[in-house]
Image (cartoon, rainbow, N blue to C red; front, side, top):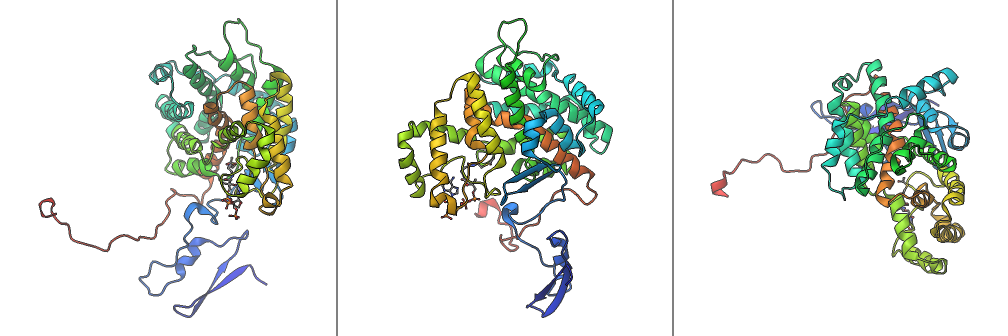
Length: 427
Ligand code: ACO
């Protein structure tokens, strides 16, 4: 038995043998299949990349059938339990967990790049009070590129490192300032004595107190949420970072493109939809009626189901536990009872069981964010902060992969054949 695929072209009767590697055939191998010498050759057609691997990646593994998520081989549950977000960011970018010295240096570098050029505040002040924080975030990422001309040297590993540090360091500052802007409060500058998430909470919520002290449970909860959201292999935004970055665009603009993808409601906006749904249901007594309406296809059970996971999303399990820890501090979010009842009924209902519909990461995360005081418009921004580490890891992997070129798909042209131009006065 050989690892090859034999293809018979019934148009010509010719046979072709193409190699199978890692369960994949190379689309370019199809090009040899032609009906005439001047034929372009066979292509594959795969709108939305449903069955096409666009890269070889060593960063994140998802096994949707078994409900497994691993970063660089480490199970997400172990990382969420024992690691920190900055350590996970290092792991995603460098392939290994840092030793103590590497960790200290990494944290030190990031902590000392949290400030943002003061001119950026002028740009921020130009936005209306009700500007969506995620749209601001997209534009701030692009705007940062104007301050760092050297970031265009994307083939230089030292330069890449410098800007990776800057981006991871500045994401919380940008994010917090979008929130302060929308609430009309003055921007709070970073406090380098605090942790990554402790400082983020400081920049979000500090008022007149001389020294902000983050609640350790909330500081850790945010760190765990950041770990859970740090990467998710070739999703829409990671693919955007890779595609734009493949043109050798600088990392700020490449990440602006990724953030723009995450802004879309089909990608980063589902937890907001969960909260809206829970508010609409309003009371646990209404849950059976709502579930029935889902089965009658009147609406979907938001936060349930996933294109890849056909099992319990491992991140949802961690988040559910985290929610209870956060509520000990913030007070119980009354919507949690509705969420628990929905989950209980759905997990025992044949409609959901047969379709392998389980809670996904968004089912509980919105409840935690709301309890911590975030408005729903901040949810995608909270997603973007940690995902920047994943985007950068994916971007860097693409740049250092010798097989990659500018991302440029083919098309099947379905337009007119050649026709002659008709001048305007004759139309
Ligand atoms: N509620 C009720 N029924 C559902 C749900 C749901 N949440 N999700 C899927 N189904 C049903 C569909 O009606 C379909 O049933 P049928 O085969 O009888 O017609 C079957 O399950 C398969 O559904 P598809 O839409 O084909 O599955 P797909 O993989 O395309 O969709 C998606 C995945 C978009 C996530 C879907 O499950 C959904 O809409 N969920 C709710 C929104 C949500 O929570 N999104 C967040 C995803 S996680 C993330 O992006 C970070």
